Length: 397
Ligand code: PSV
Ligand code: MN
Image (cartoon, rainbow, N blue to C red; front, side, top):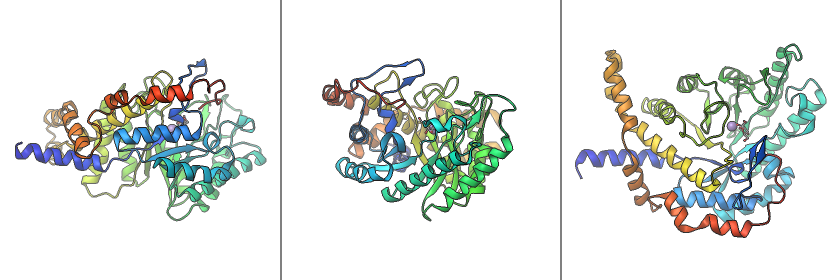
């Protein structure tokens, strides 16, 4: 092997060693669209099954040590379910990751949760967030991932500014309950379920609310939560510059919040986002970014889709790591546009699969995780075990 080839291999390996990706418990459960659900015999219907599936993804990829939990779906009894989660953590070698309060399912939230005009309902929503923070504390989870469905469907029916005030107040209360090492991640989304105005619609609103909440609050970027034309890497660059980037929810989109596999529609966009992160790290910026998947697969097998997502993220992460940023900076400074663009695109075109494969082999993971999943027969095994147990399905996950 030539010296330059082994240097590239080392660089790729260093990049992959640092990439940890959190998988979502809800990515293993039966799900669907508002038109219906297609049930999969292998889908997880208990928290134990979700942990088992997560352990399989970790075994195959080596990159997913934590499982994001959604409070109502995974801990329906709140803090009383914490001991069960702790047992599952031990049994499966998977740690509980970010804790996601659920402010979108209860009937009371028809007109909003933290922004509801009814003070008693706002109080109920704050109570749920505080209980979620307590769950996170007991589980040793650092991040509370907060997403609100709040908004309105018709102009003139809600006071947008009053709702901002209620939101600021609620988030300050939540922040005051964090341990010093915990973080509050505030996610935005332009629309759905609200179709006229959404209370946290974009990264500017999230940034403002995070600053108002307190020093441990950051912005969570869900890659599917942007309008089609949005330049997401520019948003990411701004959030890095202002010290407000807390984490990502990975998925891809073609039209709206489609929950498609990361990079399935536009892998170049993820490459561009990863380049911004590597560039900031090269510049010595202190980054602390949680990488999380947020996908619910209707058609793909769930374990398979999660493995595919992790491998895709790893490939794109390595491509972006290998951009020759010193040379790129020279070309940018000289405004040598075509050469800069070709260098940048050249890194994207590079086939890094031999590098990610070599890294997996060197770390004792299957060289081809998707093939290993098929060879192992995990999905067939759990399909048999879980058969007949899916007559009822949770309302969403
Ligand atoms: C909302 O669309 C969202 O992206 C939030 O992160 C929720 O927690 C998640 O989806 C539920 O799937
Ligand atoms: Mn999300």
